[in-house]
Length: 314
Image (cartoon, rainbow, N blue to C red; front, side, top):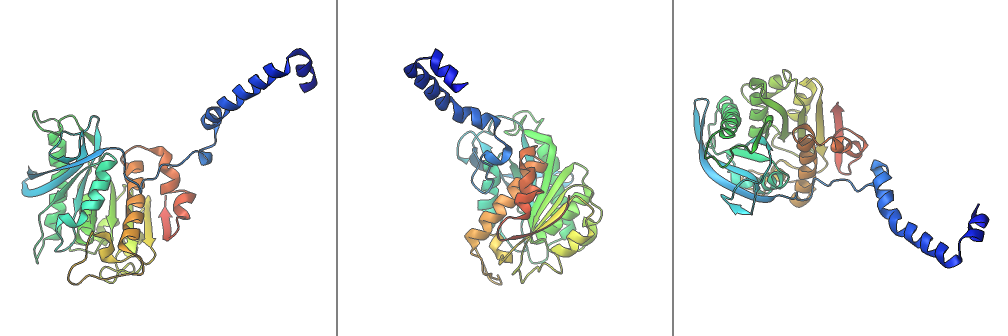
């Protein structure tokens, strides 16, 4: 066939034809490549949205407290308009005696990927109510839903009220599980070093039928895996996953350590990079509707992620 082509087409013309084909082939290859040949989304890197925040008072469901809301904006900085589109909502619970500023890098990361996250400043004293904190997290979601239809609110028309989730660290992670058990509007929950609470977050996990993620650190000496996240995961019906970061520590999930903090063999920067990737992929898949991230949440990419031990009930 090639000899016949040479007889009917001049050599210069043939060379031009081959050159044109080679010039087009990369795009054609990309269009028909298998998923493994296409560059995967990297949720551990910052997303495309400008990041902004606002401080306000949340009043809903009989609760009232101050909070900071991190969200995707039209420009970076405080109090900017919300970026166009409809964005999933989160309520995030801080750890025991931890200021919400300790979670700034994580919540800014979520905002860069399009999540609106309400972080209550409540229950920050020496004797917090775990049950009350769970109610505050749920009130945050109730408030955010109401803001979506409130004329004049910066969040009007910007909240995807069908895709709301809960998250938190340590005490806040346990409270997020309590909240999920009380709130049918919550569609997924993701926790960091979740600690047992009163009432029991382990027992609450056993009642959940929504997807739940438990992220832990193997070197956590404050809310260790065996007595906390492992029990929660074991109690939880599918779908659920336990992701244990090798060498990760309890205070490695926050931006800086304080009195009584632990340490691990992993640097804080490395732990936070893994945490941001693991949790953002999960939230984008469960709340953001990004089915392309299945492999990073439930598939081989998740199961073989370096530095993380993976257990799952898909």
